[in-house]
Amino acid sequence: MNSSTLNSNAEQTIDSEEARDLRNTLLYAGIITIGLSVMILATSPLVISLQIPPMETTLLALCSAIVSVLGIYGLQRGWPIKAISWTSLTAYAIIITMTIHYTGGPLTPMPALYLLVVVAASFLLGRQGATIIAFVSVVSYALMLLLEYLGVIKMVLIWDITFEPQTRGALLIINWLAVAIPTLITSQLAGVLAERLKETNAELIESERMQNSLTHMIIHDLRNPITAVTGSLDLLLMTLGDKMNGDQRNLLKNAQHSGKMLLGLVGELLDINKMEAGKFELHLEPVNICKLVAQNTEAMRAAAELEGQNLEITACSTETVINCDPQLISRVISNLLTNAFKYTPEGGAITSKVEREGEEVVISVIDTGPGIPPKYRDHIFEKFGQVKQDGPRQGTGLGLTLCKMAARAHGGDIWVESEVGKGSTFAFSLPIVGPSDAKVEF
Image 1 (cartoon, rainbow, N blue to C red):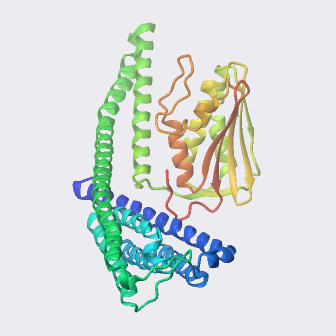
Image 2 (tube, one colour):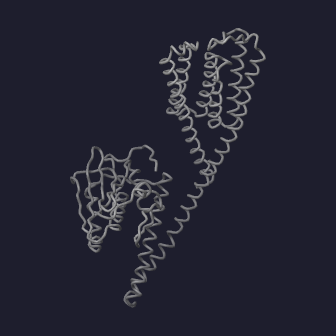
Image 3 (cartoon, helix red, strand yellow):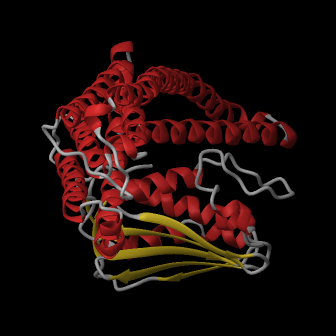
């Protein structure tokens, strides 16, 4: 992965965050304005007693809601984020100015709403954009005051206050400055803060991408020497096995077993990195899921007997055929069974189960082990997440991560149900028709 790819990935992530920020801004603005219009209509006698025109203010609130709806619609249709931001925030600034006019002009505290628009602009458009939106706000407010002063539009007086704009020119200027100065200062401060946060975020994203790329490269390079070591150990056992005593042979077999475990760990890390990067390819084919589960379970029967454990299979109809990657799903089943063996005591029971639920199949592995405390259940599917237990059977914390990613890559999900002292049930679902083209978040 080169630097241009890293920059592209960082920019795409930032764009998605900007889209999310814009969607939230539009959503909150729409909820607030719709609520305001409902409140105005519900309390219209009180609004009229304040001499605030209910019809005009309700229409303005609805106009703001329409801007929000159109903006969200544009995001869903893939319209440019910047264009939607500029249009929406400019429209909000103008709507706020008209709202100020109909709620008392210089006599109302409504100009404080300009600050909310400016802060939103700082995160969506940066410092320069926030400055421009601030100027749009203060200029439109100045124009409103000027038109009221010239008598072109009639000032709306609230609370029966007597106020003649034509005789209060100096007071109108002071009022405008009291609104303009905080608005412009806020645009600068919020703009600087937003730009610093975005720069920091972009650096963190690129740093994480570079770290993942370096990790992938190191892990990939480890595979060749580990393969060479395990191959050499295999050759030594084949050629010198009869010439070694029992202790020497056991040491060599332990080294061979450790090498294969390390090679498997490298493979899991590579697959997880590929899935996270969206580069893992599924090889889909029609698979009899009951037969696949039964085969993987039977392959573990010898290990279960050595541990003194009872292994059972509760499978569904042999006609249940799904579209999946059989090798990857076999690894998921094997990982879940291995975990069950690892934590189930001698004499315990392990059951693999397949059920059809609508358009999905659910594969479960049930054990009678010690169970998982609630504080660990939300973290065991994370990379290197483990249940802290005494004993020599601690794993790497990657098996369940691979299981989660494999299930979600197929369009399914994975979960655990457990009760301390009574055992655990790990289950994952798979759609019968196979994964859709939708992007899966890990």
